[in-house]
Length: 69
Image (cartoon, rainbow, N blue to C red):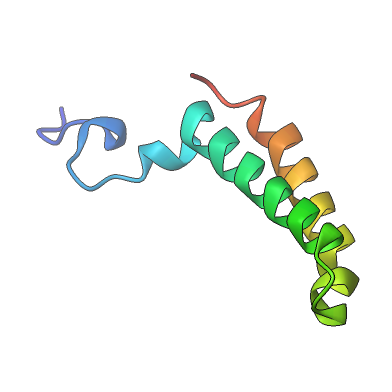
């Protein structure tokens, strides 16, 4: 019998990385950043990378939406 609590109950564990809420919020922020990069008129570099950022946020949101709450 183990005397240590499960990994999800240990202090400092990374169980918050597997929670839907915070990760969906992060994916939404990434998508919003990509949309801002797409619509800004100042930097061609940001415009060029905007599609990749939006795509990354979208794929992240699709994956995270299957995580437990």
